[in-house]
Length: 196
Image (cartoon, rainbow, N blue to C red; front, side):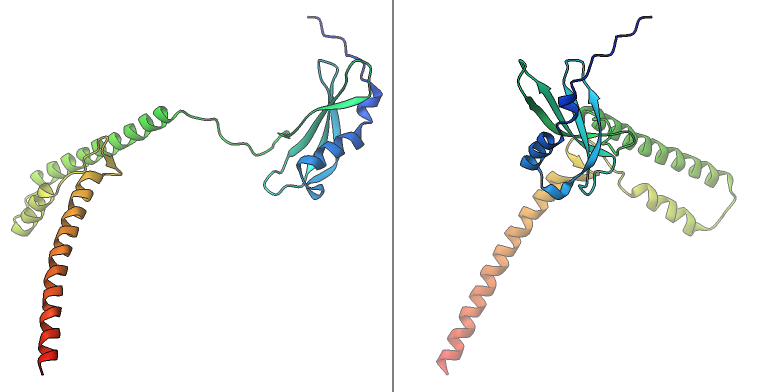
């Protein structure tokens, strides 16, 4: 296996801290930039100068300023960015919405199946017992009458939004009728008060 020979690093780039700090101060306040933290020689002859960051919430991150010499001129800034270092806190890998939704629906289906299995085992245990108490039988029948949660595309956490909207619209209609009746009563009261 052959290794690539190290490219010589231009000393002007390694010493371009003042240029790098000036570029950083154009995009971030001075108090967010810490001391120099080294450099990295890039494949294309550029050098990335690193500085510690003092931004809250970014431990282990570094301000990185890439500098290069273009066409034999003085060093110039190519880019300035905030990059994570070793052990920096990173966001988890992105998961597409369709995958997250499928995982959620599978978990909901597992909960429903698990609930059905528990109901079956409870019924089997009740059948085997010789309990003559009729109140227990009434309790079991009450459990069977309770509606089961339905999960489909129109539900949000087991709540059918369409049903909520329909009930809410009926409430407004009832409120309007009662408001009209109370307005009529108020008008009658006003008439009686004026006639005396």
